[in-house]
Length: 563
Image 1 (tube, helix red, strand yellow):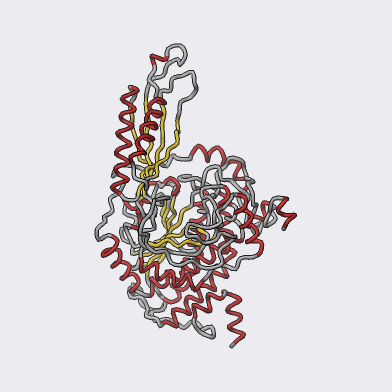
Image 2 (image 1 turned 180 degrees about the vertical axis):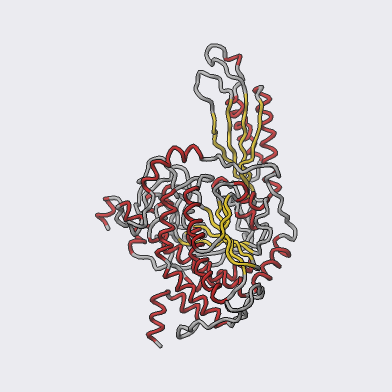
């Protein structure tokens, strides 16, 4: 008995023994409603608590056995490093894996070439599982190197960590699929990618075009530095992303400037007007812009110019008010310069609200899994990166930042007050179906975000272990949702009677807006030919670190001598 218990602990970690709540490993018994039952059966098989725990233990073992596949997927997507709307290699690679495992693929979701759905199973419930796949401009970075060392200078890279989420999801659903097939568990799994999340460019279109119309619940995964989940309002901002374009008349800037109408002047006047307007906005707002077209050369009065804005706030009415104010300021700038103005919505996101019953169910599984066992090398890399970027000594809740976390965080509860912050368009889906976000521990605490430093861990043992831990928590939560109808009943009740009782979802995009699928095309056309030489080859190398010839971890010479 003690020997079997020890083997179980070595294979799965302490979390499995906690989950099982027993002194020995219970063999998996056949469940009611097996594969021999008549097709079309819709009721889930009834299982005892002991059988459910045994099935979860099986899932954990299968996911642990598939950690090499998880590692290869994480490393491969990292090596592609594709910006939003241009994730062609990533989507091809992931859908090929799913197709080979019996999933039906539909490409071109919502008219977006790199978006897709992958479906398996039949009947209810229908559970959607998603994660983002795009990366960050100019974030190219060698993994495992604790200082700035790009693979290709100026190229994009996974400086957010979006390369880990869908590999996690695929590992989880493939393990679950085996159990569902054998035990005759009804239901449908739908995988999908968050394309161009950094531009908040697609999920509102998924909702508008009906892709979540018949979905019962959604689990989303996002990289973090701990294993966690939250419910309610997390305190983030929603936003609308808008490009303002001005059309004027060219002229010789030295010979006859009075004959020109400068579109750049209009952009600058709009920016001045908006910056003065900021004084009269509430502190929860965030607004920022980049000039995407400032003219061609100084000796020609710019006939065309453009500026791209993000307007963020805590509620839909406040976001919409900022949007309307900006349009009026842009109109004024056009009037002052005699130019013509037009504007295009490039993306949007609501403030998020996440489901309490599903989050509570997931958190029990998170506690059972626990955090990975970080090695001394993992901790050395983390502390070196934290030192390199000047990470704060404590986080926003006063907890110390020193290497990788060693304890699972508490469940996140609704904020009472927030000054606002970042945005994620998973929020639009959260207002459409009961949704939670599983945060998985593949990144290093205390980093800036949207930065080359955030890419350092994302093709290392830290990312691999974190994705495996997240896959275990996700697979077990999915099993709960398929086998315990009360979970989804409670989730729908919360969605109807708490979340949407007073707040109703109103899209920030119109019926005629279109996804901005041309974004980032030029950047990828510039860098992709050189990036191809660095795509990961799992047939030749065990890991991407090995392919790049990186010693793990690689520190600055002074730090090596002090180690």
